Length: 389
Image (cartoon, rainbow, N blue to C red; front, side, top):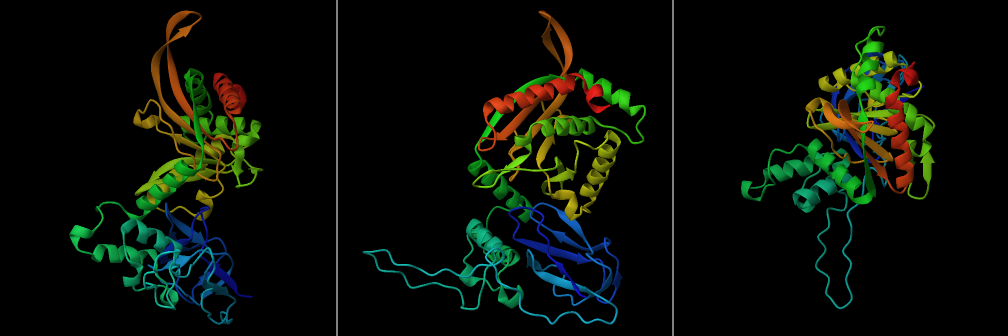
């Protein structure tokens, strides 16, 4: 029985994906789980695995095509089997939208309608880019299936304009869409922030302690992930999402770690981090970091995160406030570990201190709940060896 290969959705608001390359050719045998193609989303490039064993057939998209989420792009069939007959892609509210009509306001005369050709359709991404770049969609020829206007068509039209009318250069489409996502989060999610200074001395000691027995090299980030995940598990609302009508509690604590990639930042996911060992977390984090730099992330690597950690300590940043990644309810921003003079038993003393800033969605948690969360986190940092033993 033929199994369809579809453009996956890696993010909540993703509408399309760009097919970068097929890693197999038409007629090649494939095995379930092996890399089949590379795609690019708004934030990251990932490898998509084959969903079944069989033969790759009926390729419907080529490298460079921008494809709506959920659309079939190929089939995996049994040897000798033919792929299902090709049909036109279904037009859904999520993947495509039709041109709009012009209404007349009472007391005014409506302008002549400037609609697109009756058969033309515009992807949501193309509509957003057209508005942002000031491109007239009536002057854009679609290159997608059945003449669909894609985001690439809009970008090409913007670049083709005279230099004086063009938008400032130097911003990639990924960076532009990341800016759009963060703007949406900042303007629609009611953020509030709590700051706490934590004595990092026990954390440093714990790293030395566990490094002696670990099979892989441990970093401060590995211990951070493990401790934060265990505290998150004790506070279910920090492992939740606002659905628009209610709070949804996630059954697993999947820590999303902000990692720098080309043209932006992506959250790579450590699944079930509250029950994972330090060695498992370190191995997963190292593998994800390496593949993120190489551009070889896979869909499971960047999906399913329920709480984010953003650590800029390695850049000597003392403290910062991070923007929440929807649909998550919180993000913890971690600054550098540095010597500071603090009061200990009423006397000045030098301690290794670290500043953490918790950004929370006020629709999901309130200030008192966030304060208790930070208190419990500080307590966990006082005795990390006991918490992680």
